[in-house]
Length: 320
Image 1 (tube, rainbow, N blue to C red):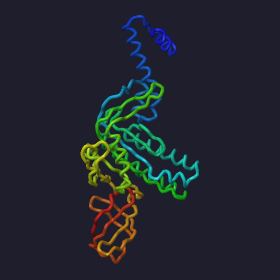
Image 2 (image 1 turned 90 degrees about the horizontal axis):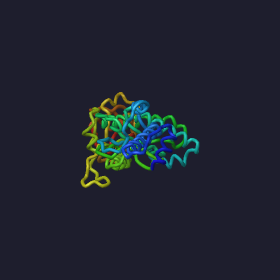
Image 3 (image 1 turned 90 degrees about the vertical axis):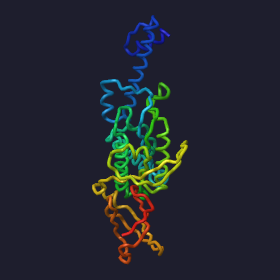
Image 4 (image 1 turned 180 degrees about the horizontal axis):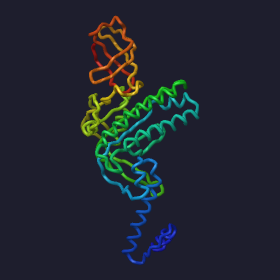
């Protein structure tokens, strides 16, 4: 024991006497501190700038702890189809750009990137540093990331079959957060029900025709002034009762990129079965304006609207 500790500490330039039990315990504690600091540096790339800055000159306790957090789970839809369509170097470049866009959006709002493998990404808010606005910051990230992916898709449009859509799920609750795993492969990890719910909601986005789904806990905790639309109740993995899920639309939607607003909308004339393809021209709290509607469809006509753009739930029943 003494020889092992002496060699270990001497190898990193530290001389610690370990002959006494009390000093041996101190040495063991020091080893834990040093291992944690090395882990901090190795994992710094996943932390937002304010955390990386503090890691440079002070200790942040990354030991596992139970915290109230918001988890963001994101994934590109039909990545396999894109991989089959594009050349390998194009797939690699697209994923590189996607990871960069995702990380920038997460860091801008104080989140920590926990995993980013292929097109699947997970971020956590309110860890490792406190963030009282964690739910709102996660929603802000989701809305910004959705817009970034729409713009990214537009840049890749010359490549055949490169229409990109993203699904994002947000869940809030208590989880265990911290450095976990073997000593040589420590990773900043999140374990708990919010992780499962976030991934489950992400998978449901395609079914509900939206880019972002949030659970009721996230909706109640956020103070970002976003508009939420109740989309129904679902029983997630391990849940004992159904939970309400919501789509979100930013209150300042008129300030958003036109790529967000100009989405495809299929209108079905109720009672007649006639359809037309229109585009949204503006979205606000009072409703939305559509372009390309047949002149024969008089004001006051009842239609069913199916939107394909990510922020608007479908189907919608509307008139006007």
